[in-house]
Amino acid sequence: MENRNAQAFYGVTKDILSETKEPAASYDTNTLGELAAKMDEIIKTHQKVDWHDNIEIHNRIAQELDDLLFDFKEKHNIDIDFDTIDKIIEQIKTVALRRY
Image (cartoon, rainbow, N blue to C red; front, side):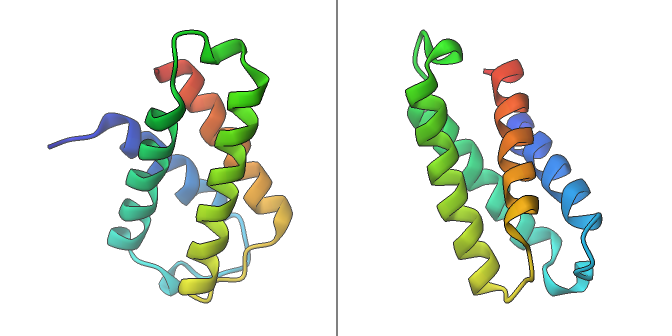
């Protein structure tokens, strides 16, 4: 099944990672696809009626995305700095707010 939200997260993450010095060879499309699907699950878990204006939910999403990206970085031995992780989280939240 096509997951348009996960596809959007995939694009955002790939674009930001491509700006880093880390070569794309250290992760593949499937790996990034799995990461994007997990991001989508995180957003869906916390998505409520009023979540757009709920800072607590935004923070929870950010924390879970942060954990997810840290695990991703460790598991695949990718050198992503905190600024890049923060940039990915902010972009994912922006996309999510527009799409959900």
